Amino acid sequence: MESVTEARLASALRLSVMRLSRRMRQERSSSLSPTQIATLATLERHGTMTLGELAAAERVQPPSMTRVIAFLSDAGLVSRSAHPTDGRQVIASLTPAGAALLASDRAQRDEWLAGRLAALSAEELATISHAAPILDALANS
Image 1 (cartoon, helix red, strand yellow):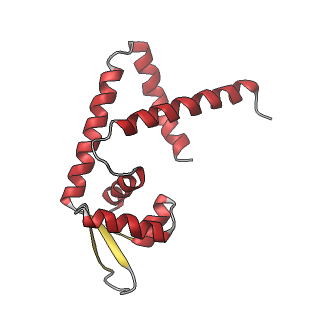
Image 2 (image 1 turned 135 degrees about the vertical axis):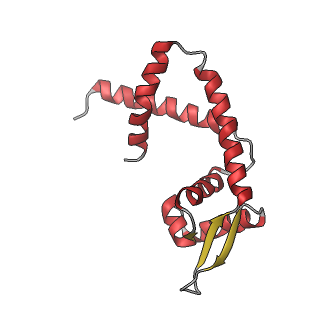
Image 3 (image 1 turned 180 degrees about the vertical axis):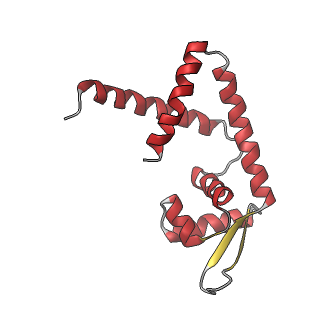
């Protein structure tokens, strides 16, 4: 059975992470949805992928990913092409415009966050520095 302290920490951490996530979304430079931005980031990280692979990576249904890719393609942020060995599949790739949008979006949010971090004490910065990899591990578990 988990302790009361762990339950309280879980609740406080959940609330803090949700608030920070919401605030970071408000600092986005584009009007794309979180799913659209995440799809661009996945393509940047993993390279060309089929729509099925993208849907699995983003934990959405394939028809939803088809709509996301159609929108991103129409916006010039992703290119679609036929799979080289399976004509039934479509592969998606990040375009230079998509990569530029991601870089701009990240730079704007990083600038905002760096400004907030600059107001913290050295001790608070050290604590966040130690916590960041732990939070990343929690997110990937």
